[in-house]
Length: 236
Ligand SMILES: [Zn+2]
Image 1 (cartoon, rainbow, N blue to C red):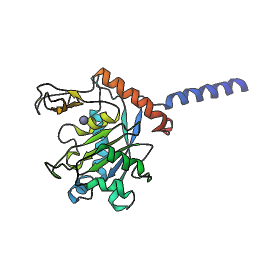
Image 2 (cartoon, rainbow, N blue to C red; image 1 turned 90 degrees about the vertical axis):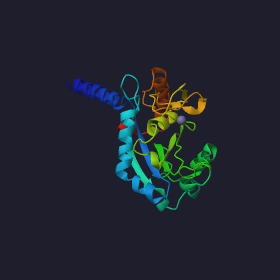
Image 3 (cartoon, helix red, strand yellow; image 1 turned 45 degrees about the horizontal axis):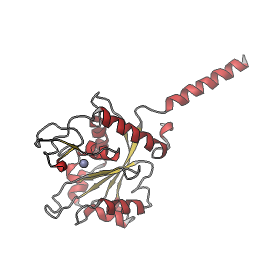
Image 4 (spheres, rainbow, N blue to C red; image 1 turned 30 degrees about the vertical axis):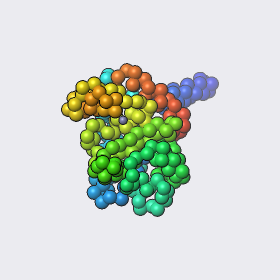
């Protein structure tokens, strides 16, 4: 009897352990408001940051309507209040055109886990700048960065404004490249990863979910992230 009970306990444990790895995998998102602009801070409230997670979980979907991965709100930090990682903080209101190599170098140099959380996908809110548009520029960015992914979203695009920025930039973080949308206008329905940079049309609305190939890429990158990015994943 004793042995049977032990076996039952053991098999119960095995079953419980097997259930802990969630499908789809869930990734923590660490929000960091880098900009010190009053309008931006007024918009980037903790409530809004939680809504950003809802937006990702609503629109980061495949053609089958399923989420290849899901996202979880972890934390929000208003970096300008802390006075740490001044090099990265400077990116919040930087009056120069975005340089991805420069941003990545500042990201890597920051050792404060509130600003660069190695166990989460870091989501930065900044005020974009271009020589043409000044701080009216709203260009946003997403980088896989050697499986240390982060996104950089202009504050004016929070709450899913202008061409689906959340899921598009997060797509880059999960290894996706742009796709061309020949002839697309700004009002045309296009794939989430559509872009004007192939010169054939606008990026469009980016409201068509990820295709099968894109979902496979996301899942491949998710597997890679899961080994290091979310070490507490099994405990969720
Ligand atoms: Zn893009």
